[in-house]
Image: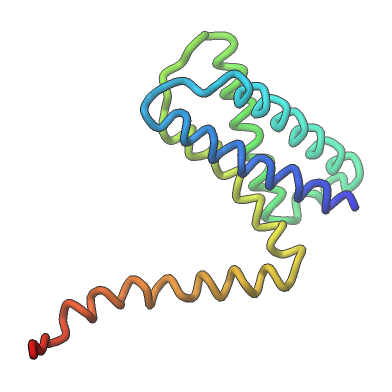
Length: 145
């Protein structure tokens, strides 16, 4: 049940990231509730990493996804500490993108449910033909009756 709870938190983080991207698209600042939610999510992810390190010790670092988690959460913690020490730092798009990588943890949700994984992979498989289709329509000869 712990993995299911973690998946729910990751999905919640995805929703928060969407709201944050929508709120800051015009250069405005994110609402306070989004900032609070991000800090709480960061604290939760940091606690999760420490608990997993406590349980698995050095075996924790045998997984690629654990390395991704430590890197992304570490950079996010460093960014928040820097922001609290320096004040308002300029919005660096690279750091914002790195922060959005946290949402990539949603892939765990897809792996957890095999039916959802099959559906997402099928949807991803339709993307390439959808990109090629307009080119085929433009290249085909037109017959006017």
